[in-house]
Image (cartoon, rainbow, N blue to C red; front, top):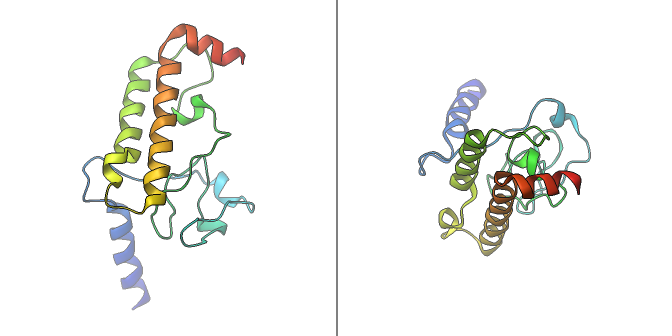
Length: 145
C-alpha cells in the first residue's frame, strides 16, 4: 500500500505544475540538501531535508508555494552563469525565459496575495539580473562591485 502511494505521489510531483506548459521546479543539488539551517516555508513551516532552500529552489517541496527571493543571491548564480566577464548570451536568454515561465506574475493571478508579491519580486530580480549580465558594461561593473 505504501509503495503504491509513494509511486503515485512521485508521478504527481514530477509533473507539477502540469497546468502551465514549460513550468517546472528547479531542484537543489544533493550537497545543499544536507544543510541544517534551511529557512522554513512561510506557508506550511516545512524545513529540514525536504524544506525550502532560498537560492536553490523557488517552491516549497512540501506545499508547492512560491518562496521569497533570496536577497543575498548574486546574478550569476541566479542566471546559472560562470562568474566571469565572458557570458554566453544565448544561454543567458534561455535561462531568463525559463525563469520568467516559472515566476512571472501572470501565473500567480489566482494565488494568495503573498505569492503574488513574491512572484513580482522574483520577476523583478530576474529582469535586473538579465539586463545587468546582458550588457558588457553593466556586467563588468557588477563584477567589480
